[in-house]
Length: 372
Image 1: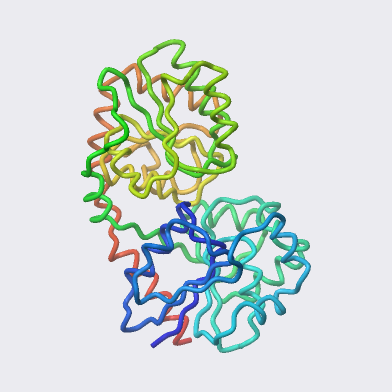
Image 2: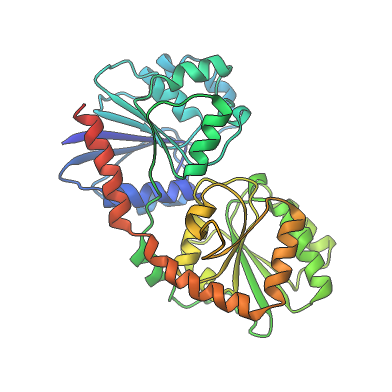
């Protein structure tokens, strides 16, 4: 049995956290003895870990300034303090403080892997480190760096000028489970069939671009009142978004759904999925939208061309700016043929995402590392 540690900040409602649960639940338990360890014992996704997956945490709750607090200590000290067992493979599954911690493991027999889930600038990549020099030193301790999209990999290499054993492995999604759950009834929300219903799913944070999506939507409503936007997710921008809705009299046109264990049934019933992000890795939410057959419009961020095609074959990709997203939405709203086309193409693209295939790719990578 190969002992594998996955270290991640928490198992909250984000895409990377959900993907990790999907991955470990589907890995071969006869080959891999898996432990998932979090910095903080918080998050809705913890409940979905299979019983054979060991779970540990370091701190019971998150605390303000934790990134800066952890920087007071060396990676070597943190690894010794927090990682008590010996593992054949140790994986930091999210860019940030866990990458710094895993790099401090001193056992030369332990293979180290870091996973990068988004397209980051040099400043963002080094936020959890004292400086770029420390970041580069830690990075060189890793045997492999995994990226969830080609564009994410390219962005990393361009920002850091570092390139060492980089590979791309696509996210694992529970295809059959998502499709099954998308058919469940919606009890607490009634979609208005006389309106065009848009939906967006993601944490309520700056990176997701709600600060531009809401003004765009507000303009579209002023031109066409028969629109409704559903926002599914939770985060620290909730009050700010709610304030904007009230100040602009959008209460009848925007519904904040909060976090949902089953977002798929809401996405399936919508007419269009909107991704307004400034940056992504390989968007889980967009993947899930395609799986349930809901057309997608998205800004041009990491992973989208791999999902939707370089020529907008399976969804509409617009430039990563407010005006382009506004014009793209307006085009779809004014032409039902375009919407019908992308609905059909979304259903076709669903076959691209295969749970078993993505899991086997990761297992192969880990077996090769172990046998080196």
